[in-house]
Image (cartoon, rainbow, N blue to C red):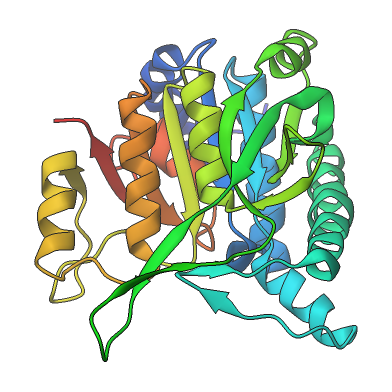
Length: 298
């Protein structure tokens, strides 16, 4: 009988080291926000799908929430529809919200479902409108005029914020051992369709489901200090301090606000990590080293 290859023993050791992490998350809900910027590389997308399938096969209950900002932008350009951003959010008029729903709940959602299916998983694509899963209200934002220093309200159109989450649909899907893949499109109490920021949507889902972890996959390594070095772990107090002193700026601020919201809703910890790193989800959940920046309440 031939001698086993040396790497077989390495593989066995890796599995043994992963065991306590698998036991920690057994039967626990993990919400993974898969950002539109993290979808650009096909190989990384396939790695992500493998990770999600492995999580489900290991006894976890993964829920995927995806974005799609770059893809929406390209479709709007193709159709000649102008779009602008205010207060960090895409202004969504009636024409734009139709495209947002088509791209998010249509092509991107089913593409991710297809990737998971190709790796042997059983995923189902949904959006917040299905079963009134996420009911949204119109989002409100204020900006400060740099000349007058006066605050003014910004009209974002059909941009929404989650008002309530009905977890019955997700409970049924998870009980059937399916992997929910959710597009951040929600319905208002008046039946209006709303475009919801994917980070915000994922935070609301994680809070409602009592998730063990919320992972925000993006295109940066995590939260960086002033010297551009990764901060491996933070508390909510650290987050607020670094926003106040200008270390955390621009698009990272709403991500951090989502993290704080999710933690306040009962999520144990939130991680911001680079979705373009091969198997970043497994590195975070199943190794001692972890990946990205982990944020806890305190």
